[in-house]
Length: 462
Image (cartoon, rainbow, N blue to C red):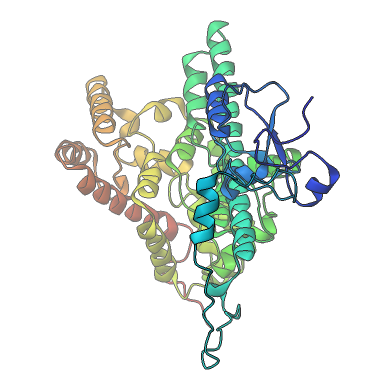
């Protein structure tokens, strides 16, 4: 078995001394095409590499090596160069014999002796310095290049590993879904619910530093307000790195985090939320409250009492709670309206989708909130004829199909006939125009509900 470099003019051997000098040895590749390229690069006539043939590292460029691990490896597709290296050891090759023919001897005799020109003393030799970065020695540049290449290789490897983990996770989920479908366990309802979580922002659930990013703070506050019980389960049972609810309250009070509304989450709440939870705290405060009491309410009581001034959106009350104290009820109303106006278009549409249909399924099933039930009954929707019910049902479906959210109108400021007429007119609006119109109706409803809870002439003395 050979223990030396396969290049004829190279005297490097696989010894302790060569390894101490930083020389590494690399076997010929098993790939037939690459193997032949290496054999041609060696420039040995009739040479055929065996399984133990090796080349030393001095026949490769510095950038051909991967030095990120404990073992120095060659990168894929590397071909050796510099295979005519002058041997490092003296005497490793025999000196060429001197020609003794008559012509050669005569030529040497006729050659004039070499003349040596003296260098004037007035021309001193300039020795370069290495005081500047651009004057670094080749060895220093080689080391810097090797370190940079090693760093790039490390980052590329991390990127590849991350992509591989993501691919494996996706494949696992895809296989699981396919198994559910094959075994006929996956029905349409389950499939729709799983699609809701297809774009779950998993990166927001991991904490990579000692502080939470702004995105993580907003995500945590929104998640907590949409589902406090789910938030506690993720944090305490699954040990996901979510901040404590007290930290969320501190962020809300200082303005470091601002929750937003998510249409999908609000939609899934619509059918599952128990309307009674919107009524529990407010039943005991039907009498108008003093504004001073409003400003002194604990956070949980404030959200419980004012959580439905915007239909099924307690997150709005939670967001404006940190803006207390309010000077008067107008300031209270303005704060809520400003919060709604500051939402994205998707957030505004999420608020609209929390509202029930007029004389719709929730009305018939008795699952409306107390406020909505009272408001719809106020215009006689509890006593519609069969023809009016069919007409309203048809328009509800047509309206939702066109705009993606239910028809919203302040029923306390309208009557049954005007509502039918308004619905007929507004269904012809454009999407942007109708969204803005519906949001104004939400504000009207909010004002009336708020004045039902707080003294209309309430003032707060600072």
